[in-house]
Amino acid sequence: MLSNFREFQVGPDPYGRTWNVKLVWLQTAISIRHSDSVDVKFLVGDGDDKDEKVIAIMHPKLLELSAKLGRPLNDAWCLKLAAFHLRSLILTGNDIEKSLVTMTMEDMERANRELDSERATAPA
Image 1: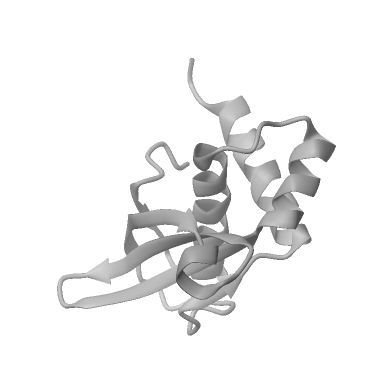
Image 2: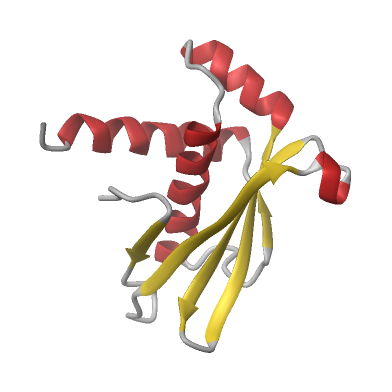
């Protein structure tokens, strides 16, 4: 369960390792790479062995999903979607070698289901 989306641990990965993850920033990518997306950057690893991972969430797809779900589009939701997607990448090893990963609509829907599921099972 992810209770702190700014700093958390994920594991084990396919090789049995557990990773420390720390949020670096969340910002619109139009200003940094001319992309109509929200980019969420994390540091993954320990000590000197840290890797940067940027999860890109396309703005038009965010608007579409937000409208479909009747959910407000805000920074907190974007951070949580990105954190759940990064967790999935680490646990499966898929795309983990990439420093920039763009979420598909299916990725966003899956991450949102996981978020809703964890919220439903969280202690009151």
